[in-house]
Amino acid sequence: SGASAAAAVPDTTPRRLFGDVTHLRAGSIRDTAVTRQSFYRGNSGARASSELAASSVAKLSETVSIRAMMDSFDFNLPDTTRFKEGKYKVRFSPEYVAQPSIGYSQGGYGGQGTYGGTTIILSDLLGDNRLALSGSINGALSDAQLFVGYTSLGGRLQYTTGITQAPYYLFQNQTQSSLGNNQYAVSQDIIRLVVREAFVAGIYPLDRFQRFELGARFQNIDQQVFSLTQVVDYTYQVAGGLERGDTHNVASANTVSPSLAYVRDNTLMGYTGPIFGTRMRASVEPSFGSWKLIDYLLDVRHYTPLLFNYVTIATRFVGSISQGRDELRFPKWIGRPDYIRGYNRDDFSSISCTGLPTDTGSQCNSAETIGSRIAYANAELRFPILRRVNGNGFGFPPLDGLFFYDAGVAWSQGQSVVAKAPAAYDFSKQRALLQSYGIGFRLNLFNIAIVRWDYAVPFSRPGQKGFGTWFFGSSY
Image (tube, rainbow, N blue to C red; front, side, top):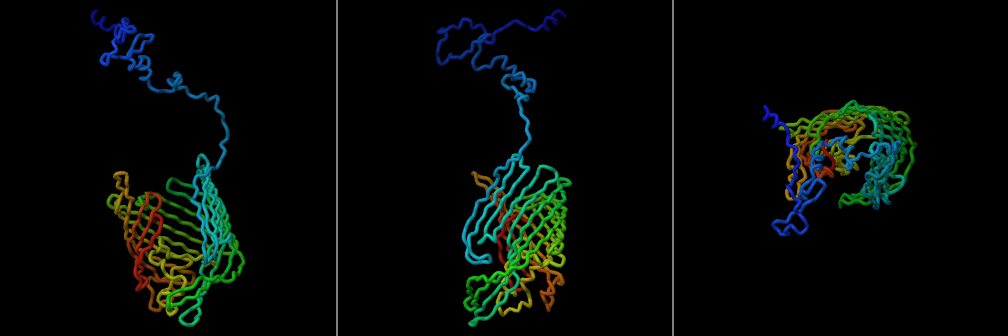
């Protein structure tokens, strides 16, 4: 037991880390490449210069804590009593500036003159406040486009407000008269609308995937009518320049339009478009004042992944209906490349399919793609073709392919909708379903832009061959 007690007592005899070095004196160490060493002589004795002091080793072994930092001269916290408190002030600074453009145009709907514009977006330090300024001119100041908008993102109820001005040109009618020698003077009547708008809209999220939108806007619309005339020679297939006639002013209109919308979105994005989930938007917007109408919108999209998200089936249904006394004030065009593909080459400058004066237009008409009410559906089978492969500092941009089928119809009040054009088809009274199919490609150009190309066959146009269309933007 005595031996055990003795063994439990620690040995406290002081020892030097490197033995007795008192004999070391200047000039007593042989300076050779083999025996050369460096020592540090402190209050506790000498140690090799490459070794840390025992106190430093103990300090480094401690856990870093607020207490340790407060006790350390090297890690003193700032004195909070010297802090100054002040109310946060919003100061805007440029966050994004679009590259300005400028040029000169001759002829066209707006006449000739200088065009160009730019966009500037300002933001504060927290990013809760945004101010957007955008403007452009298009031949004349009366055709200038303007947007000024402020957005608040600091609270759960987010809102935006601003003012805009934009000109719109709507085709109204066309007439042609013979000049002899197979030459015709073709005149188009154009309605020019300058829409000035003040708006406010709020967004209230219910959760991460759902929200309500409530807003209102006031519109002032200036209306003008003018004609464009050109001489067309069908023998040599040439046409002269457009000459703009006199402009006639029409009484301006003022409308107030409240709106309410429900939005749901839980989709997951891929390289060129959504690959999983559901999107939906349902909204209603009545208009009161000089023009009276109600706009209804239902947009539902669903994405079903196959083969572990490698292949996706994407479907979409959209119904956009304007109903009321003035529903034809803003007609809709269903032939957009992102609506119904294959019908964006229909000749809007003629009343027939071919554009020839001898065509009666009894079988089809470009007006079939225009109406105050549209409904269309799309289905796509999407699959990857090329994924990013990094090698030697070079990466190929992702490329996706797809097969698609589109179907839709555009009509207005007083017209009936039929699935297939009958023998005595009259497009002024009936509207038949327009269909197309084809293939497409989507290229993610290094996250700068998504380049789209679709080859569509419009089989509701007998005898018309398929064609390709370039477009920008992600898939629906």
